[in-house]
Length: 107
Image (cartoon, rainbow, N blue to C red):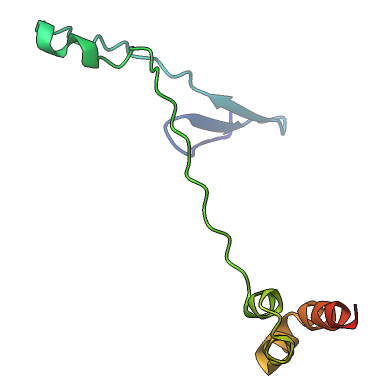
């Protein structure tokens, strides 16, 4: 061996005289930790973690939010829908919305 380098506690790198590099890892020893089993009273037996859950949680449907253009089109307010679609910020960021409003108005 010419040189040894230990990167951390797990990896050891050694350079050999003939030009080979040896990289080895240490095996980690697993420690078994026993949980201390405590005596439960009858009052709390039903609240253990390994109980079968019978209740199913169903998410509540969220209300769908429409853009200003869509809200005006649903109320048949076509000029307000066109004004909302042609706002400079909206046209520069999402020009496809303005095109969609024009196509809807041409129907």
